[in-house]
Amino acid sequence: MTESVDTGRRHFLTVATIATGAVGAAFVAVPFLASWKPSARAKAMGAPVEIDIAKLEPGAIVKVEWRGKAIYVLHRTPEMLKQVNAAVDQLRDPQSAQSEQPDFAKNDARALKPEYLVLVGVCTHLGCAPLDKLTPGDATVSADWPGGFFCPCHGSKFDISGRVFKDVPAPTNLPVPPYRFLSDTRILIGAEAEKA
Image 1 (tube, helix red, strand yellow):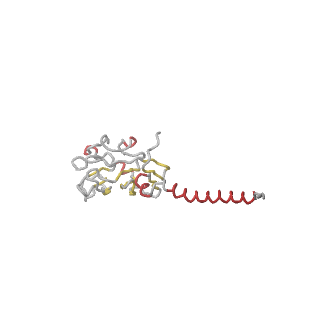
Image 2 (cartoon, rainbow, N blue to C red):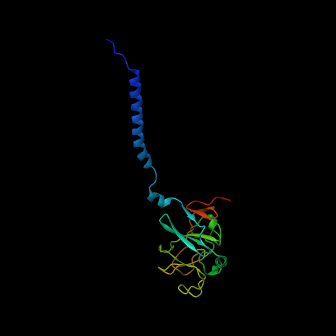
Image 3 (cartoon, helix red, strand yellow):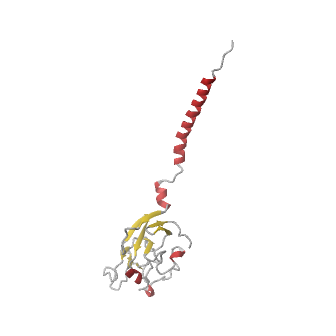
């Protein structure tokens, strides 16, 4: 007695088995591949942060977080830019020779575009958050204050470019993080500036 092979049924079973295997592989692969993505915490620790500065008025400051640190973005007014070198003889490191910043920030404005100052808002003494005391003559700092940043923890003072004054506990200027402009209204913190 010879048995005949039902090729139609065999073909159906082969296709059904392959399809079931493919669906099962997809169910296994999706979570496996998703586990390769960095977590939200890992992204926050090192991923660049994009800031929209379109509504940042002259004289205003916005604070964001990058790598667990406060980042200050200050839109300097023409008057503030005139104050950049007002107290240069009182600064410890006016040329930013011993301070942490990208090469593009080794200038008086310490910025890619002078009107936008981008700083790590962490005092270089013990890590406190300096206050923005931007108004010259602010009595809470001193009568001859030229404007800038003041650390309330131990009295360190920084000018309108984040450069440290002499005779204060902070040893260096406020750091400038790597950043670049994506457009006239968007800054990417944590990405190197493109070479000109």
